[in-house]
Image (tube, rainbow, N blue to C red):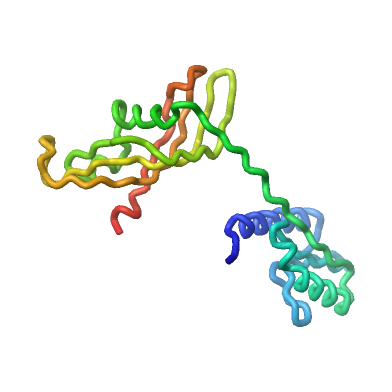
Length: 202
C-alpha cells in the first residue's frame, strides 16, 4: 500500500527541485521517459542533461532495484548525471493543551453554534468535543494561536422544535478550528470554526 504522506513529501520536493532548476536556467520535464525507464525529472541546460529520482527515506529499501535500473539507463543514454534525492519524513511532535477540548465545547455550547449545525435539525444540541488533533501552535506574548481539527458530538432533533420532543439522533461531525488562547489557556478569540457536513448529506 502506498503512503499518502510519502507521496506528498516526494511531490513537494519534486516541485521545489523543478523550481530551483528553472531558476538556474534549466529546461525541466517531469516523468521523462529515457529508454525503457521513466525518471521523475529531466533537466537540460546546453549540453548538460541531468535526471532525478525522488524517494522518501521510508521507501528506499523497496526501491533498490528500481534505482539501479534508472542509474544504468542514465549511463547507457550518456546523460551527464543521475541524482537520487532522498526526502526525510519530519519528526512528529505531539502537542497537548490542558482542558482544550472543554474550552472548545464551552464555546460551541455557550457562545455560538457553527454555521450549518443549526440547520441540520430543528434543535441541534452540542454534547461535547472529542478527537482533538492540534496541527500548529504559534506562541507569542500576545497569546497562543492554535489551529487543528476535532469532532463535535451532537444530538439532532427532528420534528420536535424547541420542545425537542421529536426523533433524536446522536452523531459526531468533524470540524476545523483556528483559535487564540490567553496565558491561562482559556479561549479569548475564535477566528474560525468550520464543521464538515459533507458526510452528513450523503
